[in-house]
Image (cartoon, rainbow, N blue to C red; front, top):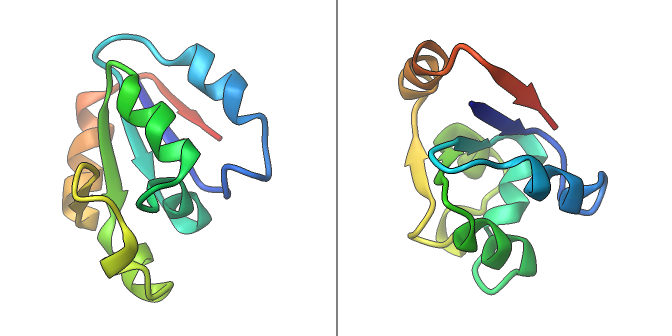
Amino acid sequence: MLHTLTHSPFQYDFNAMLRMLASGDDVLLMQDGVLAALKGGQALEFLLAAPISLYVLRDDLIARGLSAQISHKAQAISYNEFVALVVKNPQQMTW
């Protein structure tokens, strides 16, 4: 399943989202959701502890001036790679 996080982890029930993650899921942080990948942040620690693949939309990092503040453990991807994730995951959930 592909989980897309479009809001800051402080604006929704982040713990509920974490409980929904299953082994092998893909998580894409986009729009204000990229804040969850900030180095040293609690949200990032929880995401890295989950059995998922973590991605961040590169254009949203650049738009927010956060490219240097994001953990290297979250893979920055392009819109084309985002489309590939959508094709790979027929089931999707937006947070």
